[in-house]
Image (cartoon, rainbow, N blue to C red; front, side, top):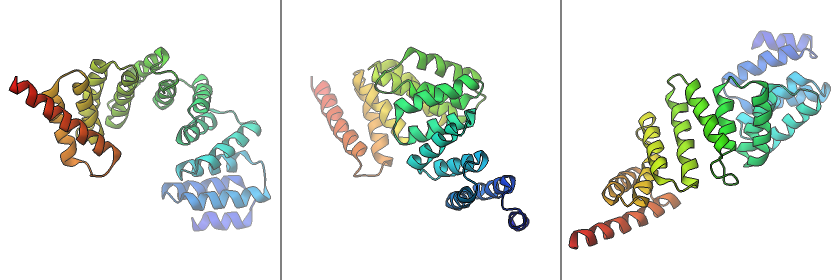
Length: 248
């Protein structure tokens, strides 16, 4: 870092030095420092594609989604319509909840490079939100993502969860249950998945299984959240239904 700063002082216009300093800062998750560094550089050298791209990445990683969106849109105006630009624009729009816009950006990135499982996954999920419910193209893309995957517990969990959420929108409870069970194999202690499995069992009339998963969730989840209150109410209903079954 010390030597790169000397180089920066000797040649302030060199965007490559800004890039190398930024990489060191990004590795230490010092995102505000990267934003400040690239913003200062862009004041003197506006329109530099390298510095602008790094700034957008740092804004995205720092969860400054509106700023990142504007930065990556400007990157496109500068003539950079590369895969990273469209991909991170899509991620920023997704983070901001602009799902329709995110789908368009992910589509552009996918058209450039469809060989990366991350873009396949994000394009699939962008086509599986409420507007579409569970779009057939989303299913095809999730299938492709699975075929591309080496065993990676985090991504496998996300893919199976995306399947499950799509089937939930369709109220296909049996398929959703299967996918949540697959997801749980890759993240065995995830309480939200456990609660979702309970909901699927409940919807399918499998009360004993629903009770087991609701109870498991309630024992581990923090009280006071909306999800906790919802599952707690469902648990009481299941207990009452089971009692009536035994009584009859």
